[in-house]
Image (cartoon, rainbow, N blue to C red; front, side, top):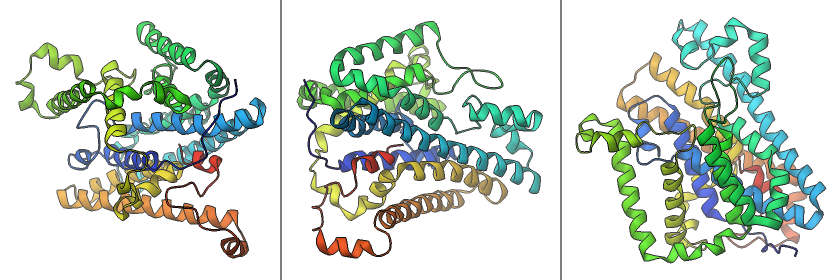
Length: 402
């Protein structure tokens, strides 16, 4: 039976939360006692990275699943792998610029601690081998872990998506089994020069596949959870508990309020292997988000959210810029002032730059699509799309999914 996809329509909730995830990851990557409190990580078990991977799976399944159904597996897989190439290229560019910048600022400003802090030491010890391992995704400087994870997940997605279009629930069950097997047997990919991946792809694939499963019809099967009063009560209670446990890890005085065994069960937070309580936290956020923010919520059109939504729509570029800016922000704070005002100014400046990049890329893509003034002619011939509908092709929508 051929799966029927609904007419293309941009879900602004995905863009909104993806934009917030990008902002939160930038703020969280700046080593600052103030800026971190504006990110997600201090208020629950999951953070921007979890949301980022989940939404990427959701949007990828919608767009490339449609192409695979309408144009065949070969065409859909080729579009998907082209997307992998785009993500990999972005990672390589960020990788090279990041390494060069850390090395340059370390030498020029006599700040040798940057080398160790941002894990650039292997580059000085064996540059050729380090660059090679970086291209193979085995070596990753500090904070450059998400794009390699996404490259691996997307590279494996063509056959997974083909199977999901036919045996959606079985693939979801297989993803769950792989997740528990990876945690039980310690499966992970090796890193250079030692250790394993910070984001274990065998565990984190669960969020990606969950997003794809929901996009391909799983959301309908679980819709009763969104309307359940019992789930609402449990969800709110769990979010409060997660906030308390997470903040106790940041504020020693709060630890005294909980039994030591209970506190140590959740601290430190097992991010590498996506702890079950971390997965549950994101699941609760998704359910409550769907309950209180429907797809046609009028508030999504508010001017207040437009910068965040724009950052979500141009997510790959914004994410890469945000990672680089987090390094620059740390350097600026360390070499000038680390006071509260300086931290707030640096944080606001970084988000402003990310938003500017998002608006520029949005404008640039429109110009590339209709060069040499043809856009004026098309604007006369074609009516404007209603608010909230997709004004880009499905593939362009997924280009922002990273």
